[in-house]
Length: 268
Image (cartoon, rainbow, N blue to C red):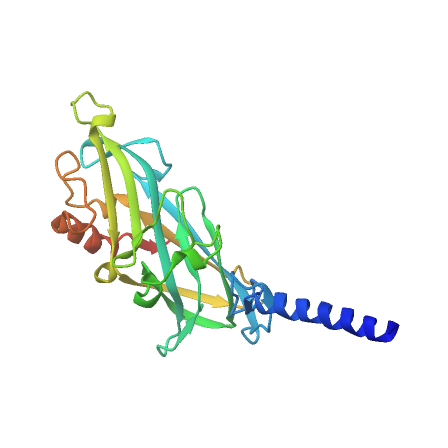
């Protein structure tokens, strides 16, 4: 009877263990791997770029020729302006060699903000590259996915303030909230609040920049990019036409979208 009792207890424990294991999401848990899954709870194998090295993005943001700092007054197109919240998504990062072959950083989604300059994009193979390509925004499949599937802290997870409109439109690719001078006293004020929110598949911007870089042992392995917000606001009437959520002001959304292609450049 004692042996039978032990067998029953062992079987029950094993069953509980198996059931609890089945509830865990399997995937690669190593952030340096090319198939890293930030939502994985059980490590089931990782892939690494052969002979690769960790590569970083450094995004240096400027406005008016100076470092861009949120909640600081700037003059944009002659109008006193505070940009209180500025965030945008970068995805589909690729280095391109002289022959046009692309090397991707798969599954990497970055939520860029002015107060953070350094972003890890993963291990990439040793080599000489001439260009960098990336999207401002999120690919259609991911864009129409469920953000609740991602953990808090993941760029694709819930953000506060929100970076997601809902299933139909998906993520807000670029969110800018601020205030302008509405009473001509030279100071931004609450009555001049505005929102510039870009998103939907139509506004995915594919950026390509000439950027010679050699990835390898002993090198910096960092892509330094300049983000010029003055360029982003080219042709925008900040005092009178400063709010869009795409469908409510497509004309302004189109201007901002076209300006997105010219706001990034190398910073050596």
